[in-house]
Length: 516
Image (cartoon, rainbow, N blue to C red; front, side):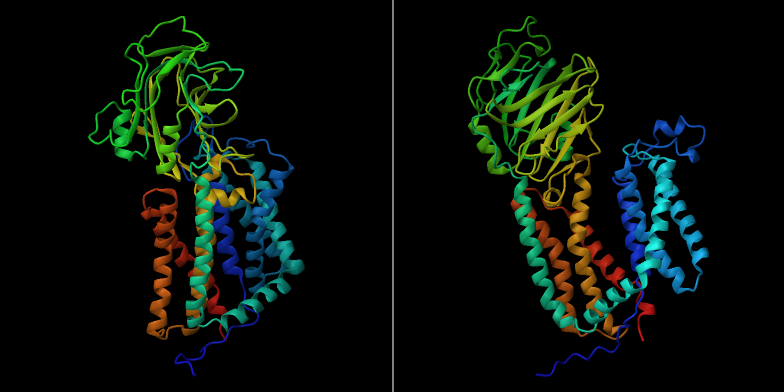
C-alpha cells in the first residue's frame, strides 16, 4: 500500500554541525547547576565587601574533585564554541584566546550572581577552573572534534531521513508508556508503607534505649491530621487564627495548657504520661520539658499509622518554646519504636529545625532529613506546621511559609538509584527527571516535522502527534497524583509542555546550515 504522505522533500547533510545545540545545552546545564535553586536575595556578605566585583574572596575550600567537576562543567561550552569558531575559519590561536576569555567571563558572571544566592559560594578559584574547562573543551575539539561530530551527524542524518511523521506517531506512545510505568514505580517509594504500627508517640524525646538527652523547652499544643493542609489554612493556623474547616480529618489534638491527664481531646490516641519520672517543674504555659523527663503514649499508636498509610498524607502542628539553641541536639516529637527505625523524627539542632519521616525513599544510606536553618531562638515561641501531600512537604512557621520545599517525587527516587542524593538537591531532581522525559520527546517531534519545512504538514497524523504531546504531561501528572495522593499540579504540566517545545527547537537549532 502506497503512503499518502510525500517523501521527505529535503535531505539531511551528512556533515551537519552541532555547535548551536552543544552551546545551548552547555549553557542550560551551566546556569541550572550553578544558580539553582534560583532564590536570589541581597545577603550580608555582599554588603560586607568593599566591592561586589571582587566576588567576596576565594570561595569555599574545594578539593581536587570539586576542581575536576568545575572543569568538566565548562568543557561542552568550549567544545561547542570551538566548532562554531573553527567552522567560521578562525585560527587556532585566536579561537583559543576567544574561548578562554568567553569561558572566564561566563564563569565570572555566574560567580557574581551566586553572591545573591545564600546557598551558594563564589570565588576566583571557580573562575579559573571553569575557564580551564572551556580551554579543555577547545583542545578536545582540536583532537577528535571533527570525526566525533561527523559520527553524530551521520547517525542524526539516518534518523531524520527515516523517521516519518507516521512512525513518530507510533513510537512516541511506546516511549511515554515506558517512562510512565517507571515513574509510577518510583513514585511508590514516597508512600508511608513502611511505618511501624508498634511505634509510640513521644514529646520531648524518642523511644531509643538507652534514652538520649531529652529536649528542653515548653510544648503547649500538638495536632495531627490525616491529610495535607492547604497553604491558606496552614498560614492562618500558625498565625493563631481560627479557620473554618480546619478540623476536617483532624485525628488527634493534645492541649498541654490544661492539667493532667494529658489526653487526646478527640480520644483517638492514647493518653500521654511523664517518663521516666515527673519533671521537677510543673505545668506552666504548657508542658515544661527539662531534658530529663518527657511525655510518651501509654501504648503504641497503630490506628494513627493505619490512618496515615490509608491517605498517604499527614500534617502535624505544634506550638513550642525552646529553652536554648546553642549546643542543642534533641528531639521535640517522634513516632518511634526502640527496636526499629523511627517513623517520624522532629528535632532541634542549635537554631535549626530538622524533619524526617520514613518512606522507602528516605531509608538506607540517604536518610534525606530536611533541615530548615534559623527557625528557633531561645525563649521565643514558635507555632510550626509541617504538611505532606504524598509527594511534597511544606513548612509554615508563625504564619509564614518557608520558601524551601521537601520534594520526594520520582526524580529523587531515580537519582537515588544512580548516586547518593542530598536533601538540598531534591527540587532539582524533579526538574532533571522531567527534562529526561520530555526533552528527548520534543527532539523526536522536531525530527518528525523537520522534513516538511514551510509546507503544510498532513492534517491527520499531525493532529495525532499534537495530541501525543498535549496529553502526556497531563497524564503523567494524573498518574503520579493517583499513586501519591497529592493534588494535580498545573505548574508541573506547564513545565513539561515547555520542555517538549524546548526539545523541538533545540533539535533544529542548526537546521539552517544542514539542508542541501
